[in-house]
Length: 68
Image 1 (cartoon, rainbow, N blue to C red):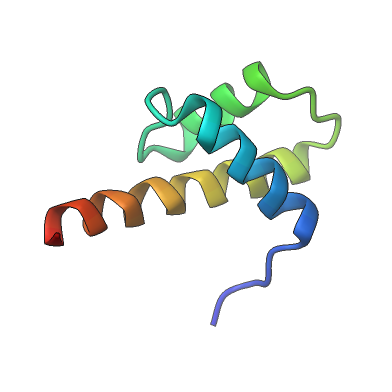
Image 2 (cartoon, helix red, strand yellow; image 1 turned 180 degrees about the vertical axis):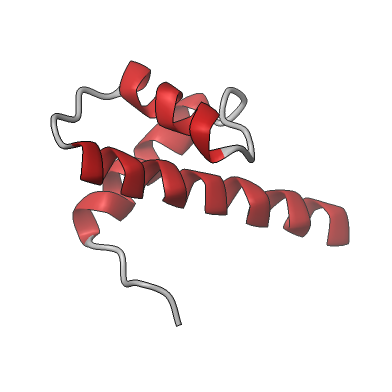
């Protein structure tokens, strides 16, 4: 089982993905840079959690699009 994401992380991530869906990739390091560019997040740990969640969403959306 994975770690549970807080409402803050899910809320920020969903807003970023809605606005910038086409720019995010399946690569964590690229998404980390993009999260820093699009949102002013002071904490490196929170930024990484958000970037990881964005990466996971992009991978699952790709899988979902392929299967349907």
